[in-house]
Structure formats: structure tokens, C-alpha cells
Length: 87
Image (cartoon, rainbow, N blue to C red; front, top):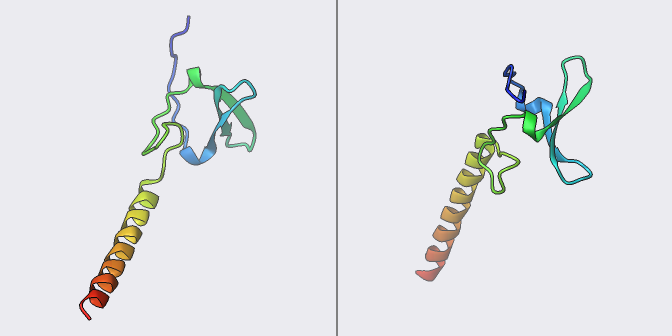
């Protein structure tokens, strides 16, 4: 009847977000026994993390690490720039 009958949580590491030959979004799930199953997007409630395009979420830890690294690099560059300008 098109109504949900259950909700199963799937660990993100077991899911690959892909597009099939027709360009439709599908989810390839690695099962506990090592097999694989392909789920159609209509059968999946996908809650992505931070994302630029809405399909592939980024790890919050990775985003935080990149931001901290950028901040440190910008700080060092600023110190070098203004340190040389005062001479």
C-alpha cells in the first residue's frame, strides 16, 4: 500500500550513495554477511550531514580539522606578512 512497515538503522560506513545507469539515486548497502543490496531512494530516509550538494555528507570531525588547519595557516601568514611589513 506504499506505507512504511519498519525503520532499520544502517551504519553510514555500510552505505555507498550512487547513481544508477538511468541517473537515479540509489544506495548500495553492505550487509552483515558480506553481501550487498541496492535500495531505491524512495525506500530510504537519508539524513545527510554537512553537504554542499545534499547527497554526500561530510564528517563533522573532518570539517572541524580543515577549519582549524586553515585558521592556523591564516594566522601564520598574517604574522609573517605584518612582521615583514614593519621592517
